[in-house]
Length: 346
Image (tube, rainbow, N blue to C red; front, side, top):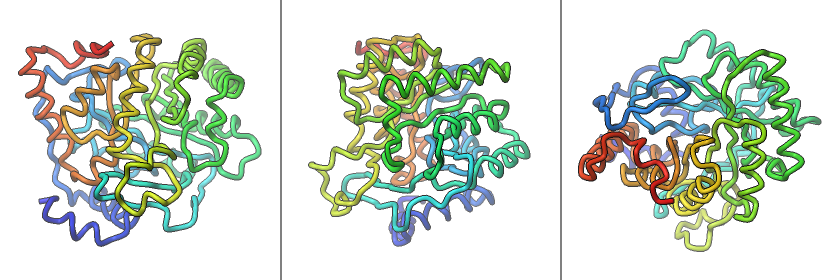
């Protein structure tokens, strides 16, 4: 059905199409399509059993409006946001661009969201039916970015299953400076101190950029380990990798997601896993649209994966499609559970 509707949907701008998708999910216009539960795919995330290692990446449900309908589509977990302390419009439109021939998107949204107060109330009023991650970041005009992360942390530490510290969007000026040793250490120390004050053990994830130099991986890994980070999400969008793209929209400024980032994402997952092993869980993101795509990320070292752009091009049944393909792969390889192949390429 989606394949028949896609040409019509793609006549709308990407942001309007996304808004329509959110409305369709909110009002249950998209039928539930739970995957068949299989012991091959079952895994655990922070003590909770999930039916699949495939989740929804931050960026799709920015304002935490449709996480429960997304669980009903067969996703094992959902991450909402990025959420900032104050509501903000983001960058001027147009700010999202399809690159159809490349199965990619470029966005320069700039953390557009309804703000922590409104979104936290929404989550309180709508208990998640599955594992919920909450992705937070600073406002564009803030004078203290670390304090913005802490403000969001205070709002959400008792509402989600984990909090993601987004330091990697290319669309907020100088945000990626947090990949530097001092900035990252100071931020994570502040987060850990806040956890102690609030007497909470909520797991912390850090979402990193695909554009870091490989020489920085060991240093970043050491800092993540020092400050007891539980998850590293690899990776966000890239402002590079344009040279082989076909669509004219490749000239647009912003973060590139989808198939063109798959290779770099897998490479980074592999390199991080060589250092951190299973001490820190890796969530792999970038270019996933098939069971084999998930399998490659997990064999490179990811425990779980997330997608967003894949759903834009393949529709709302992508979780079911991927799960069925993944089950076939595992059966053909004689594997009893997906967790058995984490990092086997290393």
